[in-house]
Length: 380
Length: 189
Image 1: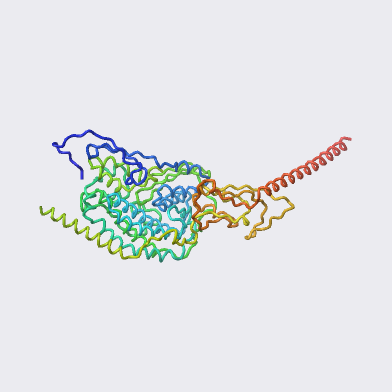
Image 2 (image 1 turned 60 degrees about the vertical axis):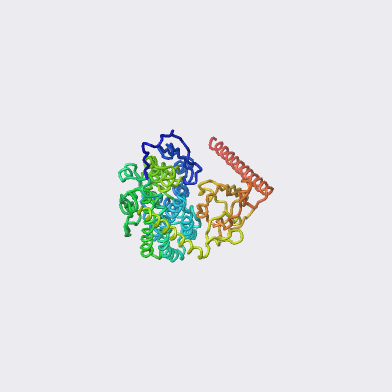
């Protein structure tokens, strides 16, 4: 609720306080310099860079394009599979490499599973910020199932380094298909449960509806993407609008914010877009599992040595947080000349000062939570 | 007034719905395990710790070159002609003494990139995950089975061999030069 200071309220002196870098609800090491007028936020200035790890410079120092992949995992450690996918697509486009069918399907299934896992974490921590502890734990139970699937195929739970240029590091085990299908089946009722427990909870709605309203126009001006943009009612999803990989073969809807309980583009809408996106991811996974060929060598198209031609490429993919872009310049040498990342969290965070003006300090927590930032990606 | 009652009713309703769900979960089996007593079974291929089967290592340095963070340090010494180091279990002949094979697990980022290029499959991940240390130096795992004395011996042997070879070469060269001079003298007559 944008708070209006009525004339009879005594004017207070403005006070500057720091929220973070160790504040639990800033989701990492983000420092918000908040200028307060009483309890009302007049200005917010985010200070970033506490988790800067020189990804782009590291990428230039690697003497092989495939050595960059473990670093891409660490950009956004909550959705590492999507990060790898984006980078690998960019390198493959530069190499003009054709990837086997089976690999494409496995990649899409993994990317969608990772999207669900990432949204579960985003939703869970959003509830946690607002004082709802139980949904957080239930979200983690479901996320754990996905991580177990990932651990079985790649050997790691968080930073996979599984998708490689031209294929996959190893073939998926036989148990992958039935386990994923089983997860899809058991997860649907859990979304309903989550809706009952959190989404349509009166207390939760009161904390999030009509808070941090982001009009579509402002969202577009700030180049927001992902649930942040869709929450404002703009139907824009790169999987539909600029299909990469094999996303043009699947039928799914793009959930957008509708102002069901408040105004279009408020925190609740952004939250709900994530919940509905999980359902759509399940739809995509079901279709992919059905169409996926059972046989096929996943290492078939993997080049022994990556011989790069001169050139540059920009590839954008839809990660759980929005448009992830990789701009790679190659100069024939084995190491990339330049790797630029367009990180969705970074761009989405830039809207924070615009939408939190006039909000209460306690609502600022809700607004930051609804942006769903990962500081690893903001700072890289 | 009416809206207040309505809102109050909705608040209570959502509290009871939430309580109902948590109550249902209360009777479901727990998903957590009591870690030190009960251990989860890791899937095959879980990446926890690097291990090197040094008997199979041919010292080709491919794993060290594949490492993005340079956590593998390998030093090799060429085996002298009188020693046959045998073959690995995969049939590759061993020609180098691996005098040093250190892996710094504090640097390792568990990416598995070193495992794939190995021609003899002697470096791989094992499922040991409890190896925390108080001192960071203890996380450098040394896999070479040669004693320091043996390393010195091997190095000295190689130096001797190369010296001998060089001397032989020099002698051969001198002979050649002498012959050439003789030839030149002959043609000069």
